Image (cartoon, rainbow, N blue to C red):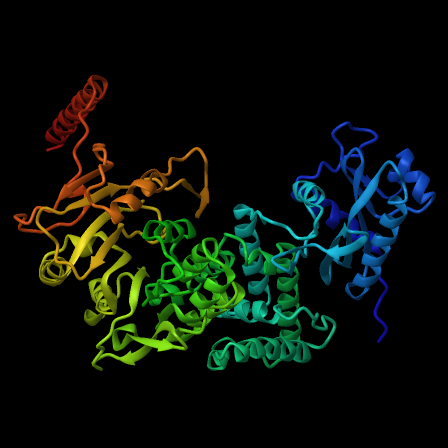
Length: 626
């Protein structure tokens, strides 16, 4: 059956909307002094452009500045992307013959509202239009004004820094979740479907979007499996393989949602974004797992990126560290450790680190698969991520080709040589199994560590306040075998909507806690994020207490004699009260109270008077009724 011809006119609204989202002023520059976008023949009103194009007119010409322009050409079918791109280059080449103006940036757009859209962009570098990229990964969206300026100033098609709009990222994740819902893809399968699609995109060759559902999904699965084979992780494919429904109509709907998802991922430059400082996959997984039931059933909460970055900084992760997360979930801490080392190491050092010194365990195979995908996209580091119960697995030192690394062994085997120097972890919350209390995960991690190693763990406050077995652990193991360096109360809504009050525990392994050793206590009520409509978004008007303590805490971890200013109800360095019968190791037990101002006292008195008056009135009314 011949496919119906679709005009490129259908793409005009889409392109204009995309340009607006990217902060282009889409008004005609000839009619508005702030305008930046010519639509079709409008560009011929510009004298210099008309001299070069004569009567030719691209779909859009964007004004970057007075003498630089950005050309966009569109076609109505996805398979016409090469044609759209080439015509954009041809228009730009004509403009570039001018001695007064240049068109160094071009984009070809192909597609329609029904099938979706794809974009190819290039920058004129040394006379050749080269693909715009970030860390060699193609930029697959239209180009923003600020990015155009950067490309021109650097005279290079390679972007140095890729800014990720977190609000747009979350909106795209929600949008994709809805698309997968409309495709009748089970909410608990969406994260693994996403993982497979992302793996399939690593290969730069395009799948046949017009193929049947069966052929298309087989191609996607084959691509994903091949990537896992290359990374010695083929066993995980069975956990993320996409499986089509049996009915033909359902298959078509399923396939349509997959294609739409791929185009939405391309729109946010997913492959390039994976190398940015943002944990892009973490954001997507957060949305998908939020709607599914699986995460709730197994106690998974995703650690926010700014917290994992904070942990890596204060522990000063280096390429020489062996980093371990025994409850790694989707890999948030490991991703941050990798990124932190990448920004502070040579290529050779990073290669050694990712191959030999990142270890993670996740009990749920599907979730472990997500962690593996996360690391593969960032340049690997997936070698030593496994699915298992961490409490039944240990890590011992191993030397491979003169490189220090570790290997997994079963708990109970004689581990003569420990290897882990840094632990980053957020064990599952609220597990009912009595054998899997949060402190047991911490103790397991400490058991794998070398003396002097550092542990950062996010745990419920109750682990450090409860009596019974929790107190015995604090008393007989945590403090008798290690030094507590710091405890930080974290914001109440950090894991919203999960209502667990949490803290960060920082421990030095192997040195019994001296009675005169001071601890850095801090209560961080704010982290620079605002909770609005069920989402937590960065907001510059909100204080960030984690940032405020970060530098001092990093110094304190190196030297506990570092002077810490005593700020009531916020921070203090103070010795542990070993005479405390409860042995509560939380900031609330050690921070000083603020001295109320005269105004605060008067407000308090006023409130007490009002409450007393209300109580008397209520009591009188109740007596009258009686």
